[in-house]
Amino acid sequence: KMRQGEKLKTSIKELREKDGMSMIDLAEKVGVPRSTIEYLEEGRYNPSLTLAYKIAEVLNTKIEDLFKVSQ
Image (tube, rainbow, N blue to C red; front, side):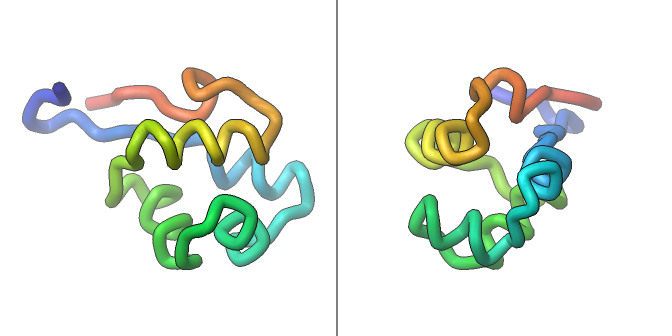
């Protein structure tokens, strides 16, 4: 459980752009609306474990490399 004041920092945008993928491309590959990817990248949304796994799989990385808890 995340404590109050903690945010989930993500490297989705950096990894996605490194692969030359748009938000729409990633959203379609993992089966979510583009806005979900936008909210994740902005740290406004915490994904389910299933979604985190799908994103990691598409970006060819590990979940723990995608998300970090920060204050």
